[in-house]
Image (cartoon, rainbow, N blue to C red; front, side):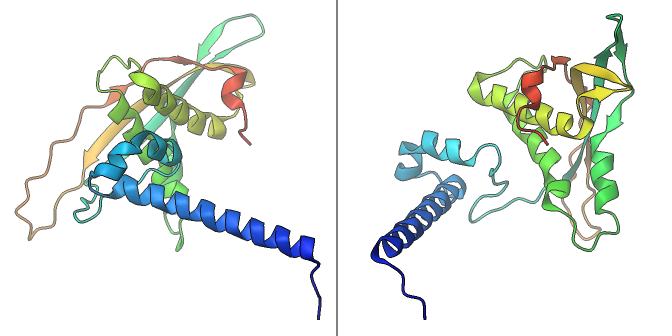
Length: 209
């Protein structure tokens, strides 16, 4: 039987306590995020948002979750620059279509394939209420960067052998019809929206595989 030394036991105990404490704080932040507004969630809203957004945002609330009733589609288009300095606008790439292809026929589809793009779009539209794409506050800038980096991680640094220098997105929504027994009136399909061109720099690829 192995006997741990006192310093080793101290390190193990402190590490375990730190992990348990960090896990507890993270779960508490998620709980405050989905819980009804209260004195604690109001007082620590800024801290909770920094933990939750954007990777861990929850699309539900305690006591009355409302299922999503629309299919969201996202396409991306890039501009590249050649050796002669000429700009080329490339064809649209269906990012959502890629996810659907990965999900279809897969008995255990990835959570990222199912939800990452949709949540990124929801985050973007909630922080950009104006149609001109103007960035609203620090969360607006974060939402734009998040959506852009998701696409660039898939597309890479080049297209057609040329460096990508700009990117834009086309967003679409299609209402899911309610079941025949439901008396609910479905919402109308929203108009498609093309976001403005955003510049792409080497810093946008930082940390991407």
